[in-house]
Image (cartoon, rainbow over all chains, first blue to last red; front, top):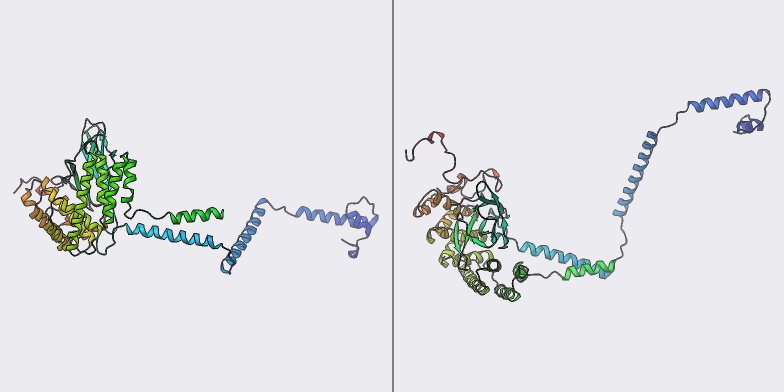
Length: 216
Length: 253
């Protein structure tokens, strides 16, 4: 507000809230202005918190968009990279080493042969059963477990006296024995065959087909 | 920090050299971890290393050493070493038989299977016959393993070889061959005399699942059924009769 719009200096100071007394028409005009401003202020609605949230959301989105743009600019434009030669050589050696490890692992796999059905090693669930109602524990150990003498434990069904376990085995021939109470090695009477173990005893043999096993 | 990364990378890169065969280099450590005397573990490792130096597959040696140690209560260490030497000799014979059969250089899986077959009484001619019928090294390996298993089940050696050859010649793959021992077991459980088993196997009668019978043997699973998820294999004599009307009929009627 200034005197250029018709306000006198005294009216200006009055409207600014200074304790000044005005006379006659000037006072009534000033009061009219004050009332008009007060009515306008009352008519204004104060925005609620939802307006703040909406505004901030827009602001954040614009900022994120700006970051993405900046990242893309950085990504597509040429950058100067500083690298110590020794560090670069070490990284190259690590990558080469990793490649050799992967290649060696692949070399250990069975050869991939077109037209055969065993290109990928699969497993078939095979159920082992052994009737020993008086045993305290029964396990199975074999070529599939690298003959770990502790064996893979079977679970007893007390009602039938049957110990059972189901194992995932790869198709092929497997030799095994049951281990009773940790010290008795016993062949499986239901195995496909019993073969000389070379140590004067026998091992049981089971040949796992892709569709499972039928025992004697 | 950079020095740390540098050192780690070099250590990783330089620490790569490892056993050639995966298992033979670790057999000494495996035996020691299982409580074997260091001298025994060393002797086993030397046998395995000697075989490896000859270019022989060593997995069978390592597995037999672990088996022998697991059975130590009744198997003295010197017996284990003797058996390992026998297996080494079988591996050499297996390699010779495999090479004579036309696989040169002989794949390790075939040599190992041939050695096992020879160790169970098969002849080099049997090995030659099975390898000749197989069209891949893996098929040859599976064929040899199954042929020796069939012989261990009681089939005559020649019949076992013939069954494997027949399966391959009729278009079956290794998976079909792997079903032969189950077929034999099923026939024996049904009371079929051993003298008739080989004939029935050749005719496809003993095979446990319809999809595996006859010329369709081993052409894949019907409907791409994954292993272990297919129709249950019921022991012979316990399945449902194909024709309910036959249920009450006496055998042979």
